[in-house]
Image (cartoon, rainbow, N blue to C red; front, side, top):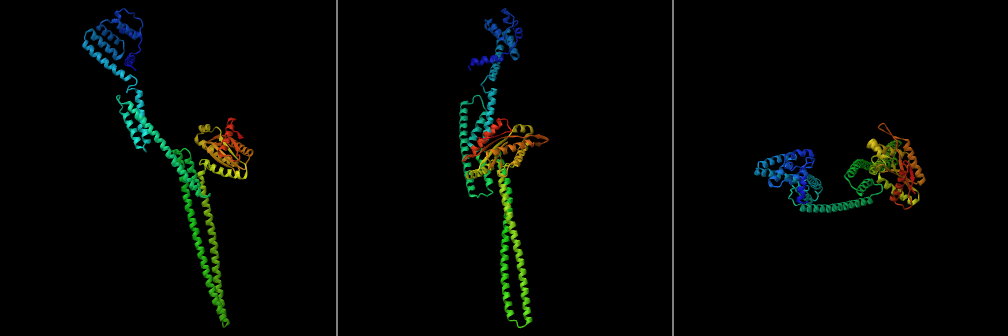
Length: 520
């Protein structure tokens, strides 16, 4: 923008829109009136043009300028009256002082209103926003890189004390360099995170290979591997951490009980062995005594002496029999205690596996989560591949679930998901499995089931769900779902099978909802 354009723009900004009737009285009695110009409506610029055209001498030109200011509003009109008075009195020194004041006022107005200057409102706002981004947003994110954080803070400080004479080109160059360095730093951080997660996953995979199939550690490893395999966010990490902490706490209690049971079992076995040793010792002493009694019988010289020896033999035999009976009873008790301890250990181990298995279950509905479904599917798919038995998967999605959430809130939505899971499990076979795939989507895994049988089973679940509405906060909510069923082809991968089931479910949705479609 040229200086002429700036001044013209400033004059237009100073000149208000006025009605011609307002301007006419101000021109009365001035040099313009002396020219005999018509008194009809005129715009102020046109009136000024005529006024200046009639001023042929410097004093008349200055008087005309004062008359023109009289046609304006506010301070400019007051300045016009002051200049006109000085012109009439031919006080050109006073006129000059007034004109200088006018020029100073005019320049300050132009500077404050001209676009692109440091005081421009939009530029000031943008500078403040950029300063906040650099200091309050970017700075904390760059704490792991102190050099970048310091540069961001330095650029923010420059904006805070920005002046018109600041070197914008140098600032822009520094800002571009910072953006480039931050971008490179972000790429490096992402690559480091990917490598660390890959290393962690490899370690978990190695630990899994070292465990036997019955180990209860599989559940914890599964949930951690599932977490690091996808996008990581704070909420998912916190949920996984809380879940694992609860499982680990319960397993700690169970492990302590199991250790106590094993120690008790060892003590009983030691006692059992000690009693066996005691029985052996007692039996040896008994044989020694009987041998002595045998010699005494052979050496007896009278009936009375023989009777005494026989009485001793009978007493010794009675004591041995009593000792044997007590030992037998103790051995039976020890055996029962060992069996009870063994059963208690088996129950505790099962509870450990169940607690670990909770990491594979959906916390809201209690059915399998995606990880649990994937593990079960791999086992069933391998069995179906070996035996040639059919294996079907159904993907179902609750109809109008978003509207249900909006109407009854998230508590109503959660109640609907639980109601669906409980009801569907009642109509499934014991060999079938239900898993929550995400949101309002569920998966049904049906081994040894043909496509026709699976479609019929899903349709029965559909009818049962419609026939048993959910009662929530005095509201009667009728639920329905759309489902797609697909039968696994030989050597077909899980992803391809689920994709076919998803396509069939989409057709069911498109066909009017509350339908079941079999994939081709």
